[in-house]
Amino acid sequence: MKRTTKISAFQFYFMLFLSRIIVSITISSQTLGERNFLDSIFSSLLLFAVLLLFVLPLFSLNKRYPDQSLPAIAEMRMGGFGFGVSALYGVYFFILNTFSLSMFLALLLNTMDPAASKWSIAIILAAIALYGAVKGIETISRASICIFVLSALGMAAIFIALAPNITLRYLEPPFYNGLDDTLRGFFVFAARCTSLAEFAVLMPFVEGRKKLGFAVFNGGVTAFLSILLFFMVSCLGEYAYLQVFPAYTLAAMSEIAGVQRLDALFIGLCMMTLVIRMACGLFAISECISRVVKPRVRTIVLSALSAASVLCAMWVTADARRSGLLFRTEYLLPLTALTGAVLPVAVWVIDHFKKERKPR
Image (tube, rainbow, N blue to C red; front, side, top):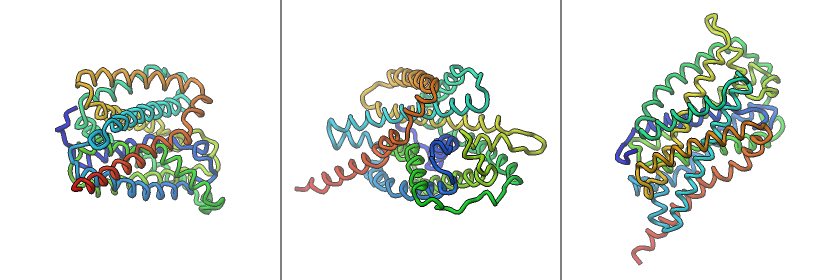
C-alpha cells in the first residue's frame, strides 16, 4: 500500500470497469421496477452523461493536487470536517462491499446451487480481496487486466451462443409507459455506481490520460449494459421479467460448440469481478485511514472490516425480506450521490473560494 506506486489510467479504468460489471449483471425487474428493459438502455446513457459532468470537479482537484486524494484535500482545506469526509468514504466503501457480496451470494444460492456453503464462498472471496488490497493497487490493477480479458472473452462467447435465439418481435417500443421507468432505472444504476467515489479516493495513484480513459471506460460500461439488456429482451421476452436474475438465465440457456449451459462460466466471471470490486473498496478504505493509522494497523483494520462484511452479508442473505429492505435504492442512492457528487463539488468550491480569497 505504497502511495508512491502509480498505475496507468487505463489499468485503473479496467479496475473500475470490473467494479461496475458485477452490479450490472444482477439487475432484474424487481430492482428496476419496470416492464421494458429497453428503457434501461436510455437510463444507462443518462448515467453516462451525469458521470462525465460530476467527474469534472475531481479532474480539477487532481490537477491542482496530483498527489492527494479527495479526503486528503478535504483534511487540508476543511480542517476537522475533512476527517469526517474521510470517515464517510470509508463507511461508504464498506457498505458497498457488503452489498456486492450479498448480491453475489443471493445470485449463487437462488439460481445455481441452493445447497452451496455460503460461509466458505464468502470467506474465500473476502480473503482473496483482502490479499489484493494489502498487496496494493498495482497488484489489483494487474489482476484486473487478466480478469478483464477473461471476462470479455467469456461474455463474448455467451452473446455469440445466444445470437440464434434473438427474436426481434419481443422488442417493445421505448418509452411506451412514459419516462418513469427510464428515470427509475437511472436511479438504480446510479445508486450502485461507485466509479466517482473510487476515483475521488484513488486518483493520486493514477497517471496518464485520465480524462480520455474515463470517457472510454464509462462508454464501455454503457455499451456492455446496453448489449446485455438487448439480449435479455430479445432472447427471453416476457420471461425475463419473471426471473430473479435474468442475466444468469441467459447464460444458462446458451450453448456453443456442443457445450450446453454456460452458467458455470458466468458464475466464475462474477466471482472474479466481485473480487476486484471488493479489493478496490478495501484499498480505498486503506487510503482513507492512511493519514491516521500506521501500515501494520491498517492491515488489521482491513482484516476486521473484511470479516465484518462477510458476517453482514451472511446475515442479510439469510432473509430475502431483510435484504430487500436494507439494500433499497432509496437508501443507497443518497450515499452514492453524497460521495460521488456532493462532497467533490463541495471540496472543489471550498478550495476554489479559499484560493481566490488568499491574496486578500
